[in-house]
Image (cartoon, rainbow, N blue to C red; front, side):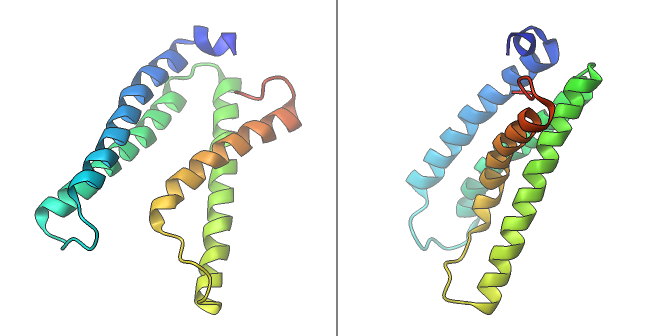
Length: 140
């Protein structure tokens, strides 16, 4: 872990992610506060609902920048492996759940909102995968 703290690419990544995370939480609070249940899809509602999505776009950009800025090929490979595991798990869960929704309509709907958080949880699975297959800290 200490190597990550010394790496300038990870420090820049952290400096990007913290304000984006605060923006996300603030935007969710704002949208929750000012958009009533069953609100019409007017410009105000859509604008407020899209604000948290801007933070998510920022997170995706920050993760891409991390890959570009990491000079150590091994560290970059660990991050890519985490992204691949997260993507594979997300595709698997969403595809299987989508088929369940089509063929067994009684199962609860999975709102699209949960796809990115599911992917983010998949990053943790990627860290575990790296540790199990490569040893060490596995890029955590």
